[in-house]
Amino acid sequence: MKKDNIKPSPEAKALSLYLMAYKTIDPMCKEKSKRINKRWDLVKANEVSLGDYMNEVNEMLASYGGYSEVVEKTVRFYIDKTGEWKLEGNDKYCQDAKLVADRILKK
Image (cartoon, rainbow, N blue to C red; front, side, top):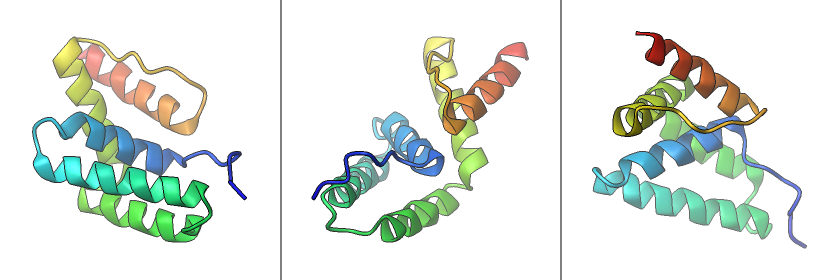
């Protein structure tokens, strides 16, 4: 049975967007992006537990400086690249990223 109703956590979303941004300039990010996306697919197929997935996400996040650092680096990457932050939403990640973007754009 598929777990279609589960959504990625803010931490998983932060990591995924960070890896997506930096995979173009860092081959290791590209490999980690593939791995974490495959693991998410396995969670949705009920082949890997959400707990195991989140442990891996949190380990990767820690290796990049933690949730706040990853959010900031991702937002800064896209602002430097495009001059703006476009992602909108009501989830925790989107709200955290918007606060970071507003702070960066005010400088």
